[in-house]
Amino acid sequence: MQLLLLSNSTLPGEPFFTWPRAHVQAFLEERNRIAFVPYAAVEAQYDLYADKVAEVFSAIGKELVSLHREADPVKSLNSVDAIAVGGGNTFLLIRALYRLNLIKAIGEKVRGGMPYVGWSAGGNVACPTVMTTNDMPIVEPPSMRALGLVPFQINPHYTEATIPGHGGESRDQRIAEYLAVHPNMPVVGLREGSLLHLNGSSMRLEGKGMKLFRHGQEAKEIAGGTEMRVTLADA
Image (tube, rainbow, N blue to C red; front, top):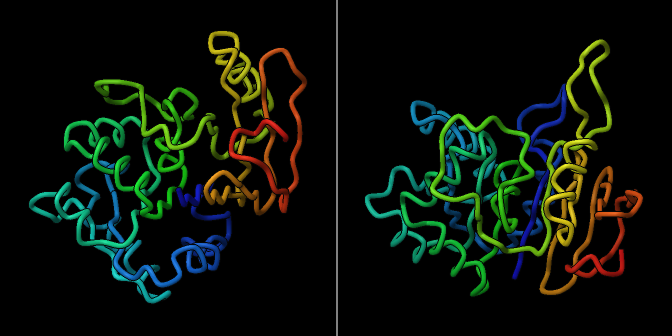
């Protein structure tokens, strides 16, 4: 499988989709017709979101086909070269993937060799479940199970930072809660400005790095530029 999983699309102070643009262009290479999955946005914003992403992809020579404009989104996957899944609210996204029968269709296409780009929520749904998203469950999906394209969970936009005077749990605490219930599943805290490029069984971390969490072990910092196996066994 060929996956490019981004923590986020845009860094503070930069125009939309600036930092990952070159990575996405190189990843897609000669794949020119890209299916865009806009369902992490609220329905009223699909057109605006799709047009915003289409402008970026057009600048790197790619045609964007937003699935919300297709009469049969599943069938339209037969006429594209790659899939891009945008960020937003993970629960909106996973609910739409189930409702439109895309959870199975996208999984089959990607396992069959079609490249997959996902950022934020789009990275979350590449995991076994959406249990390590940061998003509010504003809708109820049929299942928390996701595409299962990677054998680990991602926490995008990861940071250790806490808000002064705020009593809520940190990301590390929330991830520790997840691991207490799911002790056999690693969690990747993917920092903003970072991505994972998976090519078959190999994986390369690019950008600002990540923190790897395992149950019963001290979390491990991994720097950008590190090569790993997809299982994370050697990380």
